[in-house]
Image (cartoon, rainbow, N blue to C red; front, top):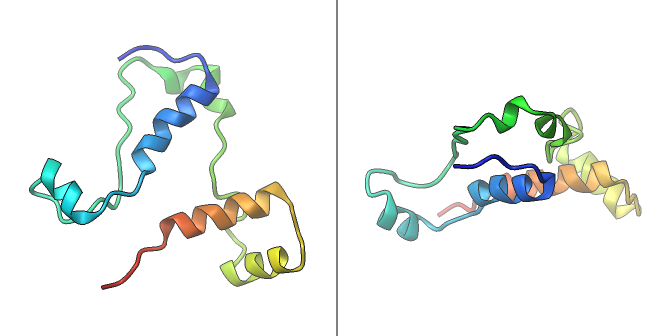
Length: 98
């Protein structure tokens, strides 16, 4: 528990929460859970109350645009960082079935 002044370091810390872990490994450390489907950030030192929090941008930049439209944009050579970030966010949320 310490204050963070670097945006990059703070985003790395948040990134640890979104890491994918398989069900077996997850249950080894959290035996009462089935799978990791969310995480909670506990801000014990008030980082989210500083100017740093305002610089954090969500991965999803085009929430109203369908995944098919995002893929079409990429297929036609669109290199807009907002499109790429949204595609990455959507792909990160996909779960494999079975």
